[in-house]
Image (cartoon, rainbow, N blue to C red; front, top):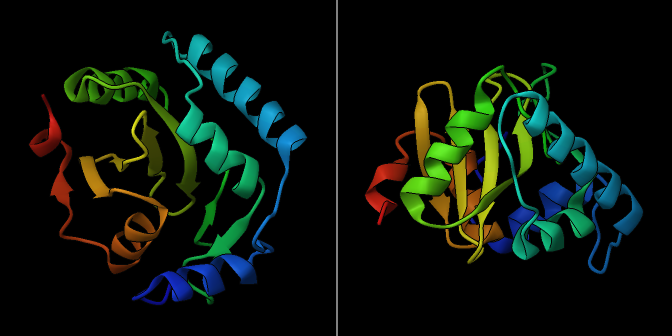
Length: 158
């Protein structure tokens, strides 16, 4: 994945995956949300769909964007649990933030999950811990493209 240094670069990366301004995929987003809710229940957790995540998914659900052109490493814009026990980890982040969170994307290489909270901030749940990505889609994806070091999610706990 090239380093995304501007909102225009983020838009171009997403456009290469099929996104365009005004894209709407409400039915796909609704189906993906139902899959995520069931998956969380099956993993022993519960989850509420929150408006910032729903808005994001209505525009981005189903996109698959490469992180590295030479591998199968990609970002899939679907809400998924990437490992058994992830529901508990997601809940721990929500509890610490004092805000509900919902998954909106994941990467296929590390199995990390991008989460959005009730105020639209983005976080990254990785097997090494939780991290803050940014206050909105653009800052989050620019931060994500740069990789580590990322701010620890606990710095944002209430």
